[in-house]
Image (tube, rainbow, N blue to C red; front, side):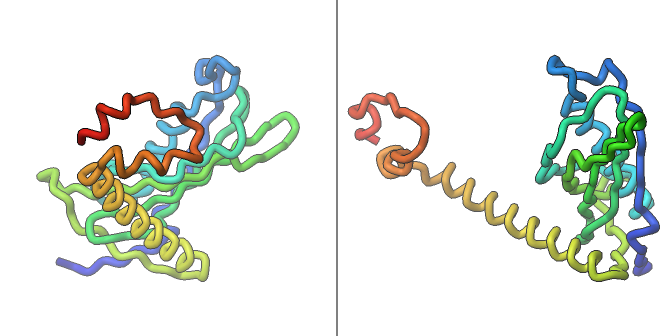
Length: 191
């Protein structure tokens, strides 16, 4: 297989859309689900441009909602490939909302989509390597690598909790939490 290398700029993608009243939630702000759907769309476009393949979303990490988006604002979603593995890639997305009346521009969201490239038989396929051309490119690549390592560690720890959970051993960990355990002691002491 040919060893393809692609630059980040080759697949950078921006989608801009006007926020209309039907996108609003009960509070009058743009619904988070609308923004997530738009993020998924721009992540796909960016990943497909980098890989030249159909791509699927396998996870969404660190969806930070920093400021509300208002009806009437122009929302631009800026996507770029931050990291590539063998068959997966991480697309970083920055969402900017602009009030065209007063010229106010605000950063509203940041998130990271992990995408997997698929071949014509719907099997994961090798993605092109990523050409890092600046200090920020290297920084974002390494940040994505660390997020991936933390995610794998978290999965391992959660699996351990699920498979080795014992209420009598764990209940003391809840002493300083804002919860009340209302389980008859005799029912859990028997475990």
